[in-house]
Each structure stands twice: as structure tokens, then as C-alpha cells.
Length: 237
Ligand SMILES: Cc1cc2nc3c(=O)[nH]c(=O)nc-3n(C[C@H](O)[C@H](O)[C@H](O)COP(=O)(O)OP(=O)(O)OC[C@H]3O[C@@H](n4cnc5c(N)ncnc54)[C@H](O)[C@@H]3O)c2cc1C
Image 1 (cartoon, rainbow, N blue to C red):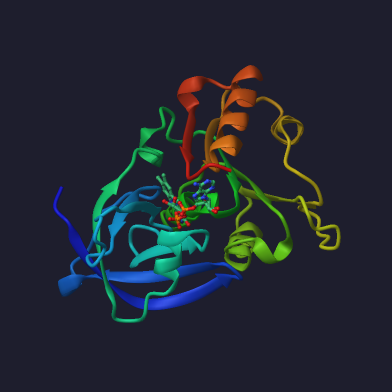
Image 2 (cartoon, rainbow, N blue to C red):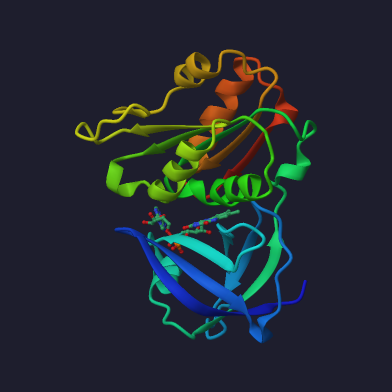
């Protein structure tokens, strides 16, 4: 696959350690991608030439948004990028996309930990922009209210759409109270209690390797069909 060049057009501070970088393609071309896909990013001045994968957090009709948590060397460099700077990319890549689902009208359940929200934000925007009628439940695990990425945008979608149900789990925040907030870790029992039957539903899980593995195993043990569980693990944790 050929490398493409992206130009940084806008920077949004989402939370204390998360930024969204809004890129456009050189020559103002349009990137053809599906909600949930990612790009491998490369700094052209990087001597060892290693790239890292980052999900496109915007919907396919929008510019290319990359939402990055500052947690190490590569993400730190992305956080330091200045407007007008260029970066190289390979992609779009990845198969955690809605069209892989067997039942395209089925009930969808998103389960994300922290920065694992990025593919689901793209998918949720895509679903509602295209007027799809799937019932969607989103279980989002974070440490505290301030670390919830896209809180305002997702709560707005939640208020405006009866087919979207949004549940927050805050493991280190005892203060923030709301009707859809639990001040503790997300557990498998929460999925079972809220969803009832998991057999007929389609699951997407994204977060750290441990988060993804634990929920994948629990869902299977509780009767979810393996073909209906789609996952992406971002990093060890
Ligand atoms: C398909 C895919 C999509 C992704 N999408 C996104 C996205 O949308 N947004 C996003 O922010 N990230 C995303 N990631 C993760 C991203 O690719 C990087 O892995 C992430 O940014 C960390 O890279 P880094 O170089 O900044 O950190 P690293 O230097 O790799 O460090 C990561 C963590 O590991 C710890 N660490 C590093 N080295 C060691 C060591 N030797 N021993 C123990 N601990 C160590 C660091 O302290 C840090 O906490 C995605 C990953 C995949 C696979």
C-alpha cells in the first residue's frame, strides 16, 4: 500500500491527556475509509521508520480525525505536532467495521475502556448520520468524569435518539452522579442485567488487551456467538 501525506489542520484538547488531531489529505483529496478503520502513521524524519496504528475517530464523510492519548514516545510526538505539519500514513486498514456484521439490522453493543472509544465514536456518528435504526447500547468504562472522551457529543446523541443507550462506569470517581452513571468498575453482570439475552446481539469491544480479552471470554461463557464478537486491542494494560 502506498503512503499518503496528511496535513494537520486543527487541534482539539479533549481531556487532560487526549487530543484530537484533524488532518486533511495533501491536495485536498478525500480518503475513502469505513467507520472503525485505522491508519498506520509514520514521521518521515524518524530514523528507524517505525509507524504506529491510530483509529480514525471521525465518520467517513468528515475530515480525518485521530484522537490520541499521550502515553509514550509516539503518542507524545503526535501531541507535539503543530498546525500545518505533515505526517505520513498507510491505510485505511482493519476489519472491525459494521459491514462485517452478519445481521446488519441487529442490536449492537459497544464496550470501550478509555481511549478504546475511538472506533465506536466513528461508527456511532456514521450510524446516526445515515439514519440507521439499530438499537445501540454503549458501555463506557473510565476512571473519572474528566477522563470521558467525547462526553458532550455522545450525551447529545443519547438525548436525541431513543435507540441509543449510553452507560458510564467510573472506577475512581465517587462524586459524579447521573442516572446513567455507576461509580465503580464495569463488570460482566452489568451487561447481563442491562441486556438480558446476549445470544442475539452483536458486540464490539475495544480497549487494552486485558479489557478486551476479559470481556470476550465472559461474553462467550454467557452465550454470545463468537462470530458476533468483534474486537480491537490497543495496548497492554
Ligand atoms: C488497531 C489499533 C488502533 C489504535 N488506535 C488508537 C487510537 O485511536 N488512539 C490512541 O491513542 N491509541 C491507539 N492505538 C495505540 C497506539 O498505536 C500506540 O500503541 C499508543 O499510542 C502507545 O504508543 P506510544 O509509543 O506513545 O507509547 P509506548 O512507548 O509504546 O508506551 C505505551 C505504554 O507502555 C508503557 N511501556 C512502554 N515501554 C514499556 C516497557 N518496556 N515495559 C513496560 N511498560 C512499558 C508506557 O509507560 C506506556 O504506558 C491503537 C492501537 C492499535 C493496535
